[in-house]
Amino acid sequence: MASTPKPPPMPKSIRFLFGGLAGMGATIFVQPLDLIKNRMQLSGEGGKAREHKTSLHAIRSIIKSEGLFGMYAGLSAGLLRQASYTTVRMGVYTTLFEKISSDGKPPNFFAKAGIGMAAGAVGAFFGTPAEVSLIRMTSDGRLPPAERRGYKNVFDALFRITKEEGVLTLWRGCVPTIGRAMVVNAAQLASYSQAKQILMSSGYFQDNIMCHFAASMISGLITTAASMPVDIAKTRIQNMKTIDGKPEYRGAIDVLTKVIRSEGFFSLWKGFTPYYARLGPHTVLTFIFLEQMNQMYRFYVLGDTSKTGGGL
Image 1: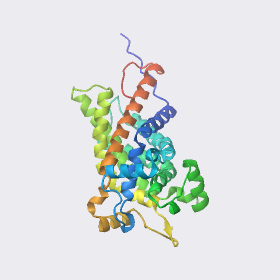
Image 2 (image 1 turned 90 degrees about the vertical axis):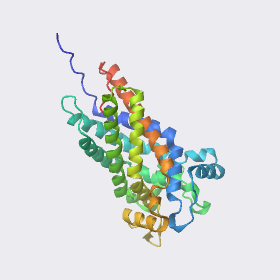
Image 3 (image 1 turned 45 degrees about the vertical axis):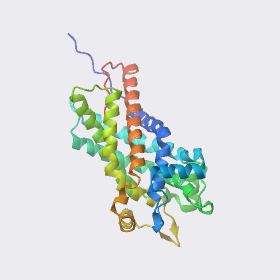
Image 4 (image 1 turned 60 degrees about the vertical axis):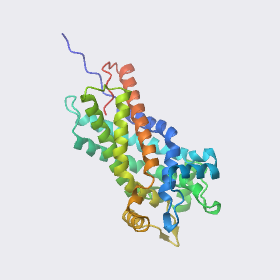
């Protein structure tokens, strides 16, 4: 009996497109959590008293002073960030994942972590300008009216940053952003792939939405714990101002040292709840959207009836 011909691989352009669309779809749901996380990470900056002691306090404060739509401040920057960063990182990861998978067997955990780090680094470089805009737009509402930057949208932010501070400012904090992305992607993509593989081999899960959900939640928790200190350094560097020609921070190590000295060691995980509340659902939604788009493309376009998840 003739064996069923192997369906052609998904084009790289489709992998990149689906990665970006999945991230953008997830961002629409979790943008308020990203805003709360950024506000809490900046709370206590410069030796000031902490503005927000809990996530609920931050939510009440934002709605009271900026209105309900204030929770979606910086949405345009969040979407552009996903269109650049997530498009590249997901496309690179799934492409490399398929390349090093031999005879249908997935690569081991360390190989997954390695390609996750590579994908994160490349994606972060392309996503940093949108990231800088996002940090500034989500933090603007916490400043006195006279100090606010008042960007209308992400394109206004990119134009004004370039005009007022120089084009290189768009890549301010690029090194810690790449460092964070390498940590996040090594943890997130590798732990998702590994968790999914373990869940399916247990016999209790099949390659479906329930499996994707469970693997995503495990991945989100691991990623949150691993990446928060680097994320705080990135957030503060990208939001800092230059006073009398002198920047507030010299680099990521300077940020971490000052935070530990003035706010305590566990302040490196400040905003853990909104960070996980944001990263958990974002991870879940991103992977579910991505897996479903991959499955539909394989089934309807490539004629693949195996119903596999799509290379993760």
